[in-house]
Image (cartoon, rainbow, N blue to C red):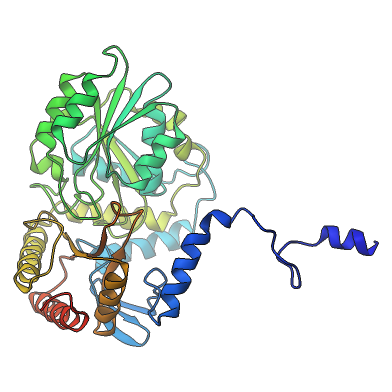
Length: 420
């Protein structure tokens, strides 16, 4: 090969090459520069934390230091439940490590059916469909339910998986102001009466931890002839007499057409699902692409999920303790002078609002060095201009740990200058 031909076949990132003036990564240059400047200041990367050892639902070792976990979404603390762990080990021994196939081909094992049976029993519904992740559950249901000539109406603060489900489908997308019943009513009223409509809501919005006014929104949606999908990813296990979610707590179970959720929060493993009473629901197994064209969950995962779900049916004491933890942490942080995302504790999520990214990162690092892990969140995950530390409580946090957490916030907030 000639020297010219060799040069032509070289990749642009090979040693000695100069990257072209613009490539497919150029659109990320601003973010890359911002991240490099942040790391150059000496702080750790908030989005690259490694848990070297996980001791329990509330404790881990990070960089050799025992650290309280307050940013894991492990709301009900099921990840180390002995029955859940034993079920996973048993399934691993009996069915192997994976299915290597889709649910519609070779990927449905006994455990997948048992997991769907547990979901039907937990939610009191006729139908349940398990996806490989909660993200895929939203992606699949939303993109499949509403098609060309139909409408999806969603809250402006909806999760990325909901937006991506809209982008994957062919329906027209209409946004309304966050938690605004009036704006939802107005926008539904502008749509053609004869068109199919799907209103997508969330029980708990994960960034700030606020809940949706579901009774009012459901009434508006029904008035305009829309079907309703409610995402209960952050409500399952915590809300309602049976732990089904905000929609159960607020008494609108009979009016919600589809409930989507995840196993990666209160259930303590990974996976997603949708439950429904619609008589035609099972056709989704044939037409929903993120279900049909994805390998199914490993047998050990669905076994842990089924066991955890059945235990959550009888977790009233855990739910009560989690509410106690939420009220104590929210009240203690407010008393210290922190700005929080909600006036009152509305869920297991408590958001501490900071003035800018620099303050948020400094506060996050001060907490981590003090032995507390929380999530730092910034746009586009949060509303424009909003930087926050997101705390997610666990039913396994002891009352003593909550008091420790408050003292860690006091020390870090004082050192950084967030509180006086």
